[in-house]
Length: 223
Image (cartoon, rainbow, N blue to C red; front, side, top):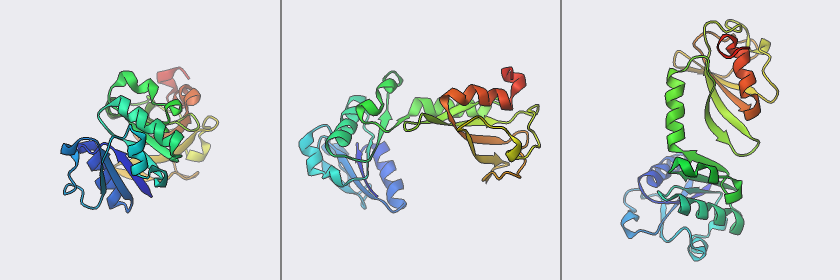
């Protein structure tokens, strides 16, 4: 894939290195001459330009990109870049970095953002995930389909401890995608039992989260 990254600061460069390591083509765009440091990511293309200007994005040939990642430290710039990429250049997928939590509500499809990444939200979710047992912790929201990636550490008093995955009556449109146990990752099968202390990762619609909590941890959530 060809990926354009708006913002060549520390975050943008780190993303670029990771993507290049996975075999993708990367173009880094930044309007600040001080941020143009090709020696930091020598395998990337670099462009000194303003990602909020149509002429700059035309110069970047953004229509050839599969993804735009807006990773600047300015939420306004990230929104404008995403909107232009989606509406003017037909970029199939946009990812927007949210710097300030109060702006998170803006990062939607209305502004051309397919996926928003909020560092404060991710950090708080990881803290909850680390300390919560029996609570469903939302880790990530998928803009398409109104589904969330959520985690639960199965409590010892769950009625499904020791039961095979296939016997757990999950809510509609909810899927158990991964079991993490003793540091190992397991792809669940219908015959595999779930155990107390398992970290369970689900894809679940927002309106089914409460139902899933009540199912797996009824003593905590009144199921």
